[in-house]
Image 1 (cartoon, rainbow, N blue to C red):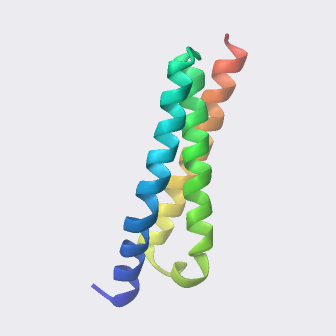
Image 2: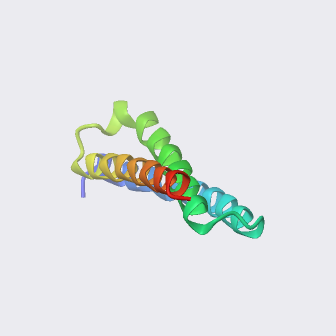
Length: 94
């Protein structure tokens, strides 16, 4: 494994858990407040995706040539799109 890949994996290991806990806490609070589950999932997916996307964009300059980085970036964008779709469905079809 080359050094860039190791550094990127360490970067993810130290940043992604914090984002996951925060987004999960927001989801839990939304559920406890009695918000409709589909709306809470949409907010969770959008928030989680945006925060992962922010982490990816911060690291873009150093890791943009790695295939693993591109996969991570694509997953983050997919999560944002899924969150927007779930929010749209929850708000329009309510």
